[in-house]
Length: 189
Image (cartoon, rainbow, N blue to C red; front, side):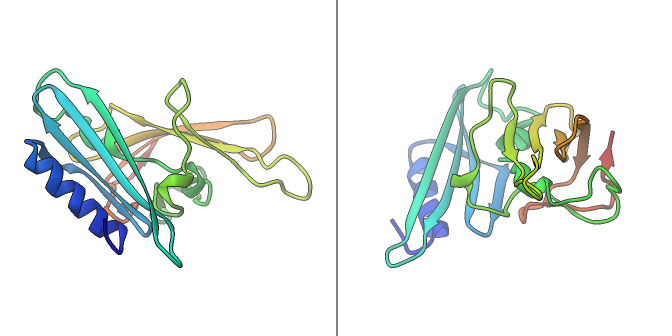
């Protein structure tokens, strides 16, 4: 299918558009080991992600397709948020809860898409933090929120560092194709 995940994604794009799917550019997302795209067609929405799972001696890729019914062929207002594969492992590395405006927040791209578990029944993607000095390291979990203004993404993140307290916030901002949300205009409530 190709020598890189980009080539695999390009072949899938060509096949899907050849079958009448329309690319939803607002659903695009890229990371160092993978890419995601969205497509719409007559009452259906298709999310496609391609990630590289093995580099040598022969590259291997993981392709995930998620087909959902939509009210019509037009992209939903929250299409950008729903297409983003949040990685709480990335969010666990940021200081979003202490000083959200201090730096960019990484929401995806710190590990291959194949390493990110599927959402649970509540819609959260869960990440168990490594133990610290043999003690429970806690967890970070995140899920998309449909309450984002046009052109922005929003997600709910819960963070626990091993104690009895779990912080929760809704993070809203502009998410770039590199997986980072810029500090400028970022809100955490």
